[in-house]
Each structure stands twice: as C-alpha cells, then as structure tokens.
Amino acid sequence: MFKHILVPVDGSENALKALEKAVELKALTGGELTVLTIYRHHSMLEASFSMVRPEEPGNMDDLMREAAREVAESAKARAGELGVGDVRAFVRNGPVARNIVAFAEEHGVDLIVIGSRGLGSIESYLLGSVSHKVTGTAKCPVLVV
Image (cartoon, rainbow, N blue to C red; front, side):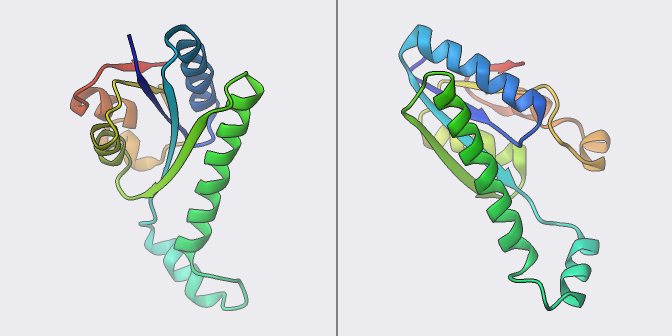
C-alpha cells in the first residue's frame, strides 16, 4: 500500500494529530515514516529586532532553524512513544507548501499526512492554508487530518 509516509509538523495540535494518524497508517502498511519541519524567516519586523539586540546569540535564521529542529525532534520522540522507533526527521527552510511537495517528490513519498491547520500566520488567511496548497500541488495522495 503506502511505502513512504511524510508528515509535515510545525508543533501545532493538528500536526500532532496528523502524526498520530501517520503512525497508525505505518503500523498497517509497514511503510517508512518521515517527519519534516519547515521554517520560513521573512518578517522584516523580526529582522529589524535582531539588529537592535546584539547581546542575543546568533541571527534570527539560526534561532528559527534551531526551533524547527526542536519541533522535528519532538515529533520524532512522540512517534517513538507511539511505538515507532525508525522515524527520520528533516528540517528545511523556505516556502512551506512548496517545500513539502518538493521533498515528497525528491524522496519518493507516496502519502502525505498533514494537519488541517497549523500554527499559520496572516499569510495563510490571505493566500490559503498550507494543507490546501499541498493537496492542490502534490503528485501523491494527501490525507488532511
């Protein structure tokens, strides 16, 4: 059935529900499970704050990358608690929906399990949700939880 399942996570409750569903599907199919967290730094306001706080370590992108890594590792640990020990976790930077679809194509994913709403931003209200964009552009099936 499904040999490689991808779960994009952002730390939201819906992403964790999607992870739980993906773990169930992995148990049924015996497929591979991969967690993907994508961060996107594009706020000029945040960039300006980072310039006036020189006492803080690193730049905003480094901080966001580290936060994304923590989200991915937390999801991987949660999958372990649910009985799946062989989960791989990846972190990427850039446009979220586009990166999810590109990652799926690059890694031979044949199912994406995604939360219906993530942490989001004002951008998602103006341009549509990430899950909506992924379902519209992915070449493999997408299960929205």
